[in-house]
Image (cartoon, rainbow, N blue to C red; front, side):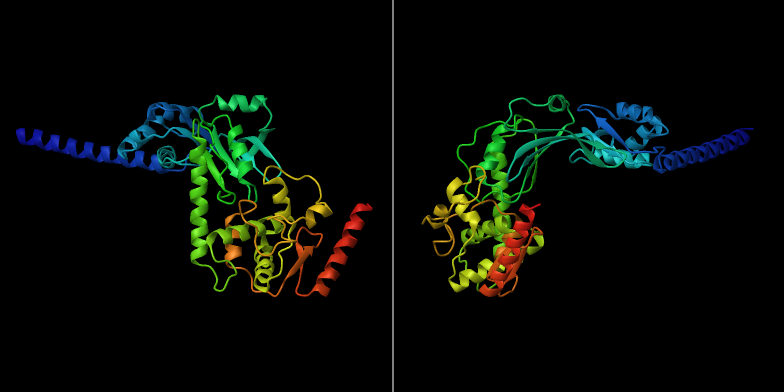
Length: 384
């Protein structure tokens, strides 16, 4: 009798274990299977939230088939305690396992609203942008000038939201004064800027911002990045260049930056100035003269006068030999690399060609013909 009871109990245990194993396998398959989402969504995880709260939100949006399996899976993979606050993009068909990875991986938010503060050569402005989950493309909802006191309602609203991301985008060729001015106008930042950073010392790039960040710390990041870029380019520079220090390379790169209209021409533009320096020719470039007038504080907004082109100043490269005393803008990495590894050409002249780029020449006669063509283009445009 006892033998029969023991045998039956063992059978029950075996069957129970078999059924439990089947349930586990079934749950695991559901956890890793493609999800029910037919279109991407943004999932917001508030600070201090729990996996249970997130699972309920996901279930209500139709992103998962079972909030219980979602929580069990997160527990089983030891990710329940790794939840990160933020706004995250969940693509269509994402499995529960993949969603858990997205909301526990960390890093910047990948969805929702962002404010981009842009420093361009001619303008300092802000954009409020909302990500469209279906297309993965940010759609602009508002734009405003930073030097205006009144901010649009769209900006005021997103400033009060916890998941808004902020970025500063600095264009190549802007001056350090322009960057310092922009930082002073961004209201989410704190701290004073004691003095304008040295011209050329700031790396044009995109920088993440956060509420309460110190303005001086942001400038320090930009300077450290530019120093690293310059050092790397200097280390791999060409032989026999007519610049002997990294500062001279930075000055040359800033001129190349201001004279380049088409990115693909950077190395050719660089070759013109390098060839001129080697030959002892004056650089004869308008942007240096303009910088001598504005000191980098804003845009000249008019053409150069004959008297300005004839005046002997440290930045008038029509009069002085060699490089001006300082950079005239903050060059990007491509211009720094072009200055230290220019194209091998015999070009010593260039002029606009009407397409946004330049016509290059080796001789003065060839250059004069290019100039004549450019004058014809100008006259044709003015007559339309």
